[in-house]
Every structure is written in C-alpha cells, then in structure tokens.
Image 1 (cartoon, helix red, strand yellow):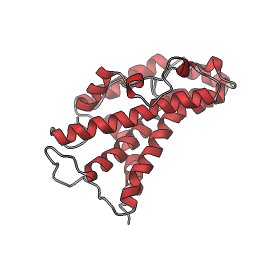
Image 2: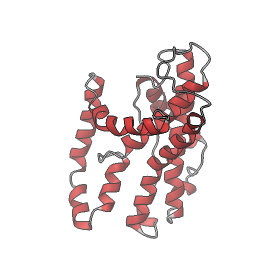
Image 3: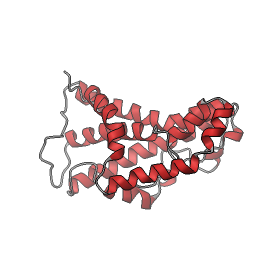
Image 4: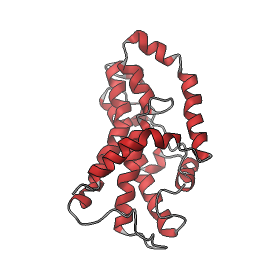
Length: 219
C-alpha cells in the first residue's frame, strides 16, 4: 500500500521524500553509533553518510514506496570491533529505531505549534503535496518504523536488542531460534498481503497512543 495520498502524483512525491529521509537517517544512526562504540566498518566502506546512494537499496526503496514493504538498506556493523561487544551492539542497533522516533518528534513540532493539522481526513491533492500531508506522513511513517523495528523478530533490530540484553546463556538460547523467527516474521508479512493485518494488530495500540501525543490530538 502507499504511505500517503493514494495513487496520486502528490502521494508518490511525499512517499519518496519521507522514505528517503527516514531510512537514510535510520541507517546513518546505526553506522555512526557503531563508530562511536569502536566499530569503523561503515566509515571505512563509505557508509557512514547521509547520502542515500550509499545507504538505500534502489529496488527495495521502490518496492517500499509502491507496496509498503522492501529491504531498504543494512548498515555494516561488526560487534567484534567494538570496545564493549554487548553494550556497544545494543547502542548501535537501537540507534536506528530511536532516530526514527526523534524524526517523528521533530516533524510533530508544526502540529504542536498549530501551524498544520493532520491530513487523515483531507481530500488528497492530485499533483502538489500539502504541508499537512508531508508532516502527517513524516510523523506516522517514522513512528511505524520505530515500533516495527523493535519487534523481537529476526531480521529486525528488536531481535538483536533482546539477544544482547539477555544474560549470555539465555542470549545463546534466543539466537538458536533465529531461523524460526525468520519464518514467523515472513509469515506475518504474508498475512498482511492477504489482508490479514497481523502486524497492525501488534503495533496498532502503541502507534495510536503515540500518534495521539505527536499529533496533539488531545489538545
């Protein structure tokens, strides 16, 4: 599905811009925090940059814009090079979703100041996007990425975060189920494509709560 505006030129423009910003910042955050933790792999590969050409898979990007899912990028992170393998990895992996939460907060400032309003019920423009559409999509998409990537399923960030936060013995046990986690993850995606929004049921309640805060809907 499209993120915003339906099948219109305005919607495509907004989707392209929002996905580029959100995913580029997400991958840069992984790379930068990994570097601060001692791992310079991404920097050495020219991937510690906000240039989307270095961070985003073009085919996956187009898939995400048009159908709502695609492999957009993967920052190279090597925990063996970190000062502290456990906590360095937690910080580097968590940096991606946290960067999306911060982007959502920044994009929500115009709503808090009353400069724009959520475009949920606006008639989508055909060609020229509105600021309401852009900022609404920026907030919603980044909140979705934040919550989605924290799901404890491989290959999402949440899987690795849980693995590193658990005591070593439990962490190794957790990792032994990685293959089954892949099956569960792609099974949830498959259900979404046949119009059984399993993932939406999981992240829907926290997403609704965060949107109420970020869009200032209680004001």
